[in-house]
Image 1 (spheres, helix red, strand yellow):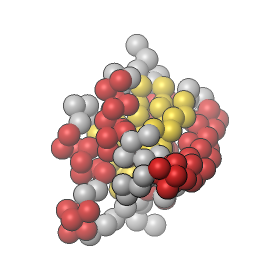
Image 2 (cartoon, rainbow, N blue to C red):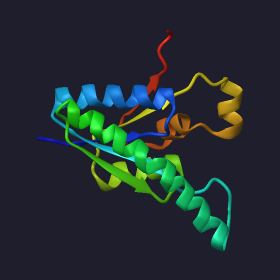
Image 3 (cartoon, rainbow, N blue to C red):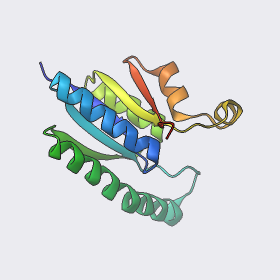
Image 4 (cartoon, rainbow, N blue to C red):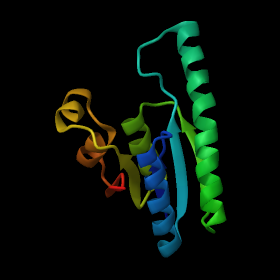
Length: 142
């Protein structure tokens, strides 16, 4: 039975690694990828500022999800792009719940632990709040 794997992208190298790993998993499991980019501005903008910020994030995110879908399609994996009007962790958790996802896949930059604690990293939030498995893909040590 085909299921969904939710993959968060942000244009970083670790995000690219997460997409590659998700494609490998989906190939082996026969799953579909839901490739997500979150377009909620990080600050509490109002009115025109909020709309402009969302539009800017959408302009950044659309090519990222489309490129990841193209990579999946080339590998023979069904994939769907989605831009979500929520903050990253909340968006991925919502999508996983709505689509009864098998798992969530995200990349993780090698940030210092204190930075993640103070700023609240997306992988950290997902691991502690998700009801489905979360695969955090590190950058390779090239």
